[in-house]
Image 1 (tube, rainbow, N blue to C red):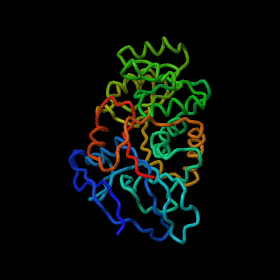
Image 2 (tube, rainbow, N blue to C red):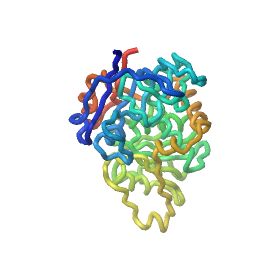
Image 3 (cartoon, rainbow, N blue to C red):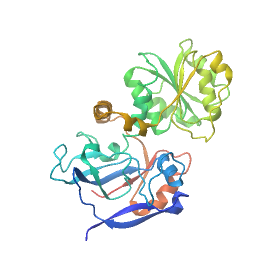
Image 4 (cartoon, rainbow, N blue to C red):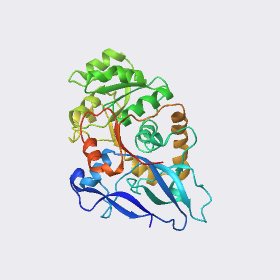
Length: 330
């Protein structure tokens, strides 16, 4: 009997402790399904949060983690006509990608065009798409307009820099370490500053008079407040992460005197609400950039699935230089 390996957790807790790899039957396609043989899947913070039981959506246990990944179609149900064996595809976020192969509804897949490697396709669905939506859904920016973001060296932050550059928007990028400045400038960041209590003055000194109309917050706490203080009256701060694990602190004055808007995004919910046409329209832009060598998320280390415990422990460390991913045999 042909089998696959799959990462599984049966209870919530420390990912390195509760996760294990087990052998399962090779999947067979049901009606309207295909079998996707996985090629790459990243370890995202949301994956660790779900294993810990801290994510808003809890999978039925036992569960296989993995919100993101890409693979090759290996088998197709006879009624499937929209995709073919051999195609590279991006998987839906509710399937559990940390396994060798999985059965998926064909109409939930996104076919990846030629010229994009599986490892890069595997990481287009969450961070680059979040960046795309952040730059399109909240403030109507024009070429030359400014935005500011913290966690600018994160995967989503780097995608914001590259997409904003393509759209002609100017970015102020806030980081915690000075050694990242030249790196993010090379990525296309217009201004890169180290976060500090003097952030507002440093932003004004760097860009002059133009208003900053959009803030993107992935940290929370004092960092988010410093971003809000840099925004022009009537501007919007969008929160998509909480790396500091600290809540937003919104003084009354930012609402009374500056009339700031505070919004949020959860990209999984956007996928759930978007039509297939809306999803593909956005993906076409991301694919076009990826084919030109952009939106390639940095990888610090790739692990085989057999080393799942080591991989999740590595992913939980701070100050990494890139993503931790699982790579699967071709």
